[in-house]
Length: 237
Image 1 (tube, rainbow, N blue to C red):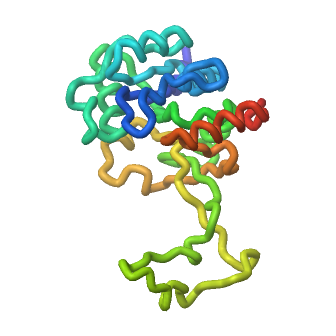
Image 2: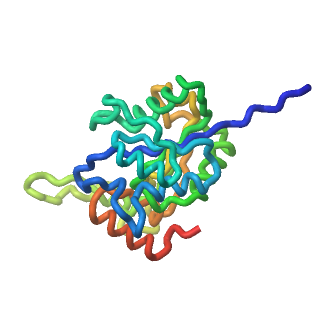
Image 3: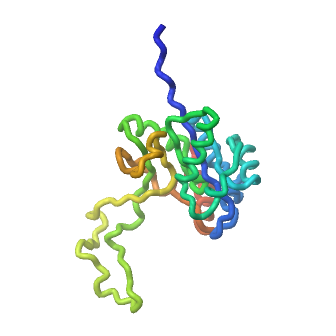
């Protein structure tokens, strides 16, 4: 009897710490009739890519809301990963460690931030497809920059602009190279990469997204833009 190849197991980890200062409780703030976090949970579930969709939070209230929309939120963050000093990857490692202690293992991990509600299930599926196509260690979403960094410089306290224009400055936008930025929407990694000191550098590939699906909510202004996009059906699938 020939045994088949083991199916890869995938987990989405949605990071949702409470206590935002710029926009209080932004992760559960109501956006077009649903808590903000619900959009990311539902998108992950709709993609059909995950064996588990887990919400990592320090708040029992957030955990209850996450569970109501179909996510696993069966344990809260530790004190070490609940503070400002902890990175999202510290949170991911903690979650993966907790599951592995219980004998539950995952091969591919997608970190999703609830502050990016305009991503689509197709974005998630396409990221997995890119990982396989490139035999990549990781896939990270990016979008084209709104303005070229060649038009950007610092200013001194006297606000003098004598040397503001760089030597490679160009007035003609169509002649400028295209620059991209991390948009914070999708981070997909293989399990073994979590232990690497240079994660997201070796065999890491970009998944390019349009600017209108790259909104990352941090302020009330960002929230209003996302609300407008939602009402206009920007992310309709």
